[in-house]
Image 1 (tube, rainbow, N blue to C red):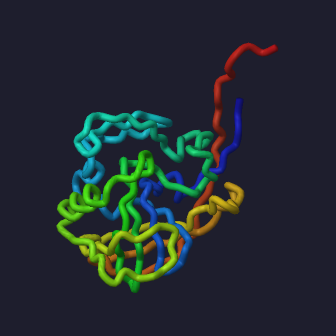
Image 2: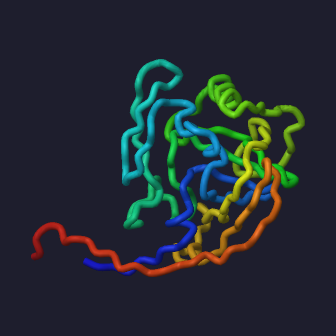
Length: 225
């Protein structure tokens, strides 16, 4: 069995995290090529000792709040065959899960902030358990005073300036979950190259997303009638 599948540069070569970005008070969610926390060694294991291995599906084992080992079934968003998406989400609406937690980032007045930590594969954890370890890990603190009253897709816990981050992010507006674009239409949409210096946005450039077609082959299963 053969099929021609459209691939694109952003989704298949750049997208490596489940983290998301919001820009000022724009409610649109953006996917990111990598987590700004990846600057730190061991960022995937802040809350556990588990190293996640990419695959179609896998068990995630860790000690939650020190009260015993739990197992959660989690899945990669994009498989090489692109025939599997978790939770019934449309293509391009979520990134690749590389850790048990998901960080939400906010770009406000050219400053990049970490504003929320979420665990998408389990129930909500107590904020007193979630945020102190993150502050200890980064050496920075969440400012919980004068939190801007802006409309983004996630609630804001506080604002931690990502002053450690001097690097480039590639971001792309996520496909809408309510009114999604057809997969190939979304794939051809451009993405942005954002250059940061100590957490400050230095420049933004629109990048045309390269696409190509590959022929995929699957062995036939079962007997033909």
